[in-house]
Image (cartoon, helix red, strand yellow):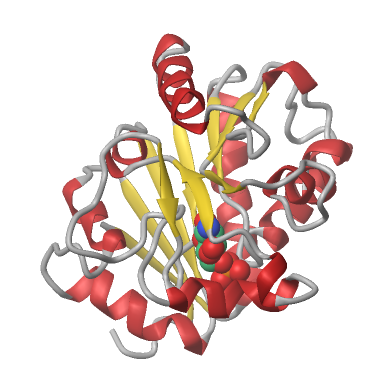
Length: 241
Ligand code: GLP
């Protein structure tokens, strides 16, 4: 895995945004995989600025997001649908029909997951997948456990993730305890992967992912199996490696 250690969050966001710009300029109809969470917000902000400045054109881009809570209404301000509209999609010239996010309103979530993987495959696969990482080493909503699942699937959330994310909901009871997430195969099948890691509270997860063996206690450690991963960390997240 290629590692880039940046002074701070702003620099990390710049490096990531530049990488995405390069990808899109090389292949204007790229299929991009996007993540939610606080980590990529700075990168998305820069992409918005670059789009307005004419440095990146989203008009031919197709996107697939990693995950979504289940069940959740798109109109809920904590849904990842809402997050992506607010932080990127409504601010750039992407075509709404080219945006794919697992549907948290689906009446048959298992069928939704199968259709999601089929659509990624039918379009030729993801060219560049952007990832964040959970404090417990999760990617997407692939949580540490006895086993990991390859395909897009419905999953339960661990207590660690509920603790980390419930603060954004009015109370813990209103937070969905399940999610739809791309699986490890769906993620590792991307041609290129870039994972962003910032902050001292991610230092342990970064160390485990980069320096330990491959294990289901750290879903992110499976990225070691991929031949084109760029890890962009800030100094705090890199402090233990
Ligand atoms: C969330 C998302 C992940 C994200 C991670 C880290 O639960 N499912 O895709 O990478 O947790 O979030 P943050 O960037 O806010 O730390």
